[in-house]
Length: 445
Image (cartoon, rainbow, N blue to C red):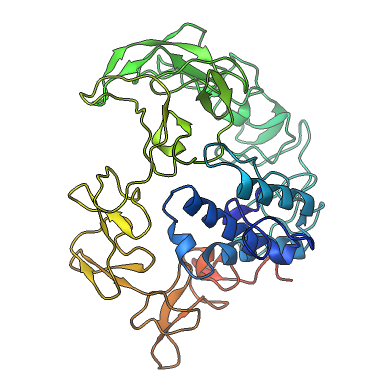
């Protein structure tokens, strides 16, 4: 992933401020990234995620998922891009968007080398190296060329070169063929030159491209993914009040107007009359036209009026409510409080306290343990290898007894059954003789 993958975006070297003179080396990247992401949420009035509250949560995930691929050659770390990313995240105003963290970890695996999706400099990686269909690790493969046999997978045409798709033949075989032009039949988006395969409203064969410009659209008759329904107005109850018309999506920087449900921007959203970038939430006072654009998850402009009718317009992000102030949805209250069922921000519970309901954040920085009777009890987080008789294991650890002793937090060892890669110490869960088992890492140093 371009921004450093699992740890999300944000971080600084050492102190949580701007990068130091020594620079942000790979060894410092994951902890810096995680710290700045969580610091920005707090600075801008948001509520930190569970990953921010767990001991080493984001940094550990980044190290185990991303940094290890640099150390084994599948990715290349670009220090200058990392430092630019961190500086932007730590200095950009909460009322503005920080620059995207692109180009920090770039593809570096050559043909025939071990890979995960997106790691290959040439060709492609056939499947996810962390949760594989076999015990073997995937290797970068060259794309197949025009007329060569291929193996079609639903929604996936990576086997063939980028200008080709894997076409199923009448005899049941499949070969790489030129991608289909607009108006031609298709099955999935990757069959088409434009990358858009649209449902036929009369129930016939899907076709490449979108509907004719000006085609009427409603909530029940949407446009193609390359289009938006201009002028559509709907009620909170899900009824179309005013139909719209299908129009091509607008490029970044294009002039736009606010719509109720979809501003029509290909990237980002329409703010201040232009299609702009949107990489994540902003602080109080920033322009918004939806809750997801605000750290407080509260925007003064919503898609509906109080009576359920349509509303159109840009608003501003509201401050995060504090103790005793009204709240509307889980996770919007200030640190140390949560949105209680009565619609107000209440103090989070302490260790050992039990709640009869399960609102988000009721335990604050503590772990929320679901009880069999439907309630929850607030408990601390156990350390890796520590006892989980009382405290709760961090995410990706299992709580199990070892050698007849008490239960401890541990990750699965090689050969043990697993339901996903996070439960394995190797971070790899592979299919082995009818059952998924922890297997050796494809990226072990």
